[in-house]
Length: 410
Image (tube, rainbow, N blue to C red):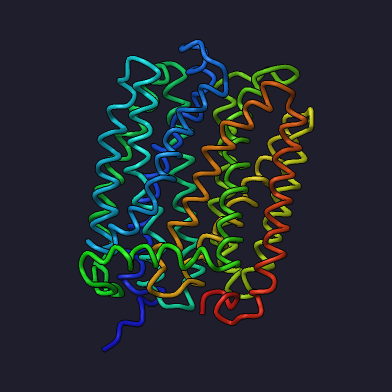
């Protein structure tokens, strides 16, 4: 019988969501573990904030460069083996990176670690779209994104809390150790793939076919608009989390490091907003939910201009919730809207744009922050959100008339 996907509530469905949840922790906790200790790392190494932020950008750059190759590897060897190899290799590198004796060595190890980490985001959503029933794809994608928010939060909070008394190296190493446990849980829980057979879509050695599968999504205006969402919104998001700690440590806030670390708890808003956005997209369509999430991001960003800590925290919560809502919709939309033979490539191209934006703007907006001030930094963030919304309005609104593109995944 033709496999139609695991149904919500089934044991296999629950194991799949739980397995990808732990894959998200293993990936995103170590990817962002330096973020909470950037001020201390900057002071210890005697480098500018934008230079310290390269420890985050190096990993996301490696990830951006690797997602497309990983999608091709996954087509050949299978989705789960590719993710398993990547997450285990990344965990080993994550344990080695804090032992670096120079900034250059740290950046190199973080770059290679990012390459290994690329396996999960490159493949997870394609695997998910193949293994769950089509009408549940948007909601399942939202649940997976919720797991990535827990990973990102855990990496930031744990490294910050441990790193405050023990140093940034111990903070990052502790996160890597937790990720090793999460990687084992992922491999134990995730069910074997039934909706995809490695190599079945092409003859062995078909390099031309591989290139065609990669180029095909780039010919679609709606796919390009989705990739632009990841590029611009993720770039804005990472930049805010990179430099907000520096902003709050200065006057008029002068917050202690431990309190700045706790502000990363705003990440929890994304844990709730991503599955909620997925559910709303299943009911009302992806396009209106995407625009609504971007509007929430803009409202949150404007509150970051306030001179009162409580208002800044509220702004951070809204900004984070809006971002993860938009990301859950856009990332889940890309593989569903693609031809079945190019789903892994469509997903990996989205994540290429996503992490390319993280690497570029996570560093470049630091120059704005250091060279001008926080106000212009926030203006740049709002402009990026506005451009993303305009591109969505141009391409995705036209596509929303297509049942395949805007039915919430059915």
